[in-house]
Image (cartoon, one colour):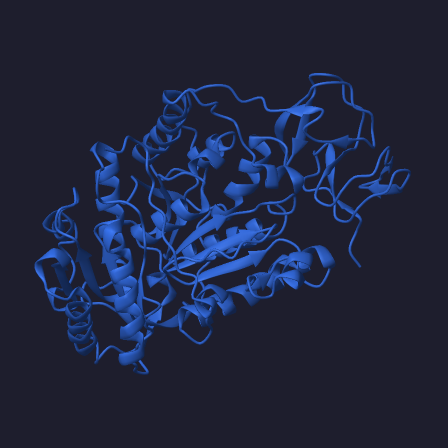
Length: 498
């Protein structure tokens, strides 16, 4: 039987409604008797004590903002009476936490594709990478025809990823586009790559090829469409050669330490930081404990919780990298005259999230308690095992693409509101509540809402999810984005267009 409300930490002065609380409803939380003064929706906060104007609201054991007026016990706490405490850029102190050595456990394995450079993929696909948006339709046509022509048990298909960039770009935008497309070409889920250009674009084909020096030349083909008479036939010929080069690829048992995942939340609600994100955090702790790799991004959704991340830096160098990551992103907002803390989104607020501190404290839980070993610039490949931070915004498409370009072969995507989005690698959608899981079975892969319903404990659900994750990694289970064919990319644009 689930409780009507939940209190996340013992010192919180608000609780969260697990179901709609009608006005006048009486409930008890940790011995505190409360009467709801008004109806409070699912995922929203209720004051557990009287608060005076300016008092802090405590959730997750941390202050998430200040009340803008007196708030009586039992009142709804949201945007009408709660505001952020965050302002501008900040200075930070390096106060590393003492880490507890991981308990040695038998190393789990999965069935993966080991590439010539030693990296391990969870799928064996041919990816068509476009240097410019002008050839999007050509790439799509090549992939459609190739999937009809090339079929084999050890082969998971040919995929192209449309984008509007590569031409009329300058400076950082051009660098970013090249970095991300090069990163996608390096992803170990791409058993082979066809790079398709036009010929006259700013992002010249030779520049893009130079950005992926570690790719096996037997598994790479490229050409400019302006230089061939029929780009579709030329593309199919190239795919055929790549298909032949992959004929001996087979899954083999590999330790879970070879798995690289990315963690993401999108369409968050008031339960994201209570169910799905902490579940993913437990998976992060488990994988990094096995010396695996986890990528985490959404930098603006670290604001207000960044000191907690900095305290987990593996070294002073990593700490300095996190400080630069945070403050450079704040300067990015200020450069364009935008408020640094204009977040959460309307959907987040409808789900019960009020301030950015609250959203961030819930969001960073996807990183568990793992030590942060590296900070990557946008499009930069992962080089360290452990928890790694990636420079990218919170936008679902851009951040998920960034982690894929940095090497993630599976994405764990938590959601309380639901989204059909999928990305080049298997994208496991994890619902924060059972209602969205039941309403969108074509979108959601795993239900963390069972924690609210009393159907599971964190321990049992973590074991269940780890088994599911290894089944996905081994190809025994396809995610809903794979079944639906939802594989998209989005590239971060920060500057001018010619």
